[in-house]
Image (cartoon, rainbow, N blue to C red):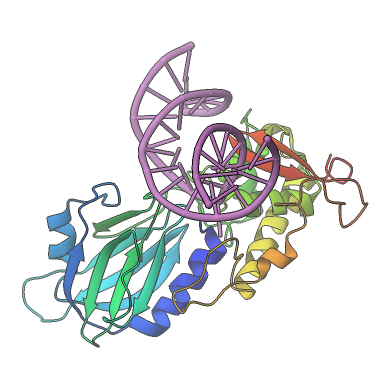
Length: 271
DNA sequence: ACTATGTCCTGCGAGC
DNA sequence: TGCTCGCAGGACATAG
């Protein structure tokens, strides 16, 4: 479900709610798909640790863990990727257990942190120090941004979704950024001019920043860890608007499939 | 090394 | 009402 702005929103609300809390015990469900690290390793790494902080890296939620006692155990990170339908909820123990709950972290404060994911595309793992393969789209400089797409024959839409190039851009924000930059999603990445690359970088950055300010896009059922919905879906100019008039020129928005992902654009405004 | 395609899952709404 | 179909915010393995 979530792209960079949604993950940022979730990480911020988790930071507010569980930073400093102690992980007393961990329950993991029986489905193997959600676990990227061995279950024993996840349990052993989390149990007894204090949550020193929660932040976002690409589309991942990163929990910084520190030993609660000084002796033997080391710092570590708990990494949660939410896939398409994953969510992290902070709730009271008596709260009804949602279907497809795959992990429950029992906190020292008496509350629970639950990982729920119907489609099981999400992943839990533990690692010493996490890093994303791709660059952060909010920080990248123009020269580095341009370098990502050099000699790439793939459509620019697919390149934007490639997490090894940029970490965090997903299907909604790729379409929205390309519209705002006036670039067709099917254009070969390597064919973009210097000014198009500059426009695209700014469009990606601005659309992500605006979406973060609005708490992300709530389509169907997305909510943050406090159960709040985002409102950026009201600002979508092309995503999910197939056949509706372009907000700039009234031309009907087109939907095509690129790299197996539905892609929305205005045939008049995007060249 | 890069690129296109299929696959992993469940749930929802549209159309009949 | 109930069925089938297509589609969904992601990422990986695989084959060329």
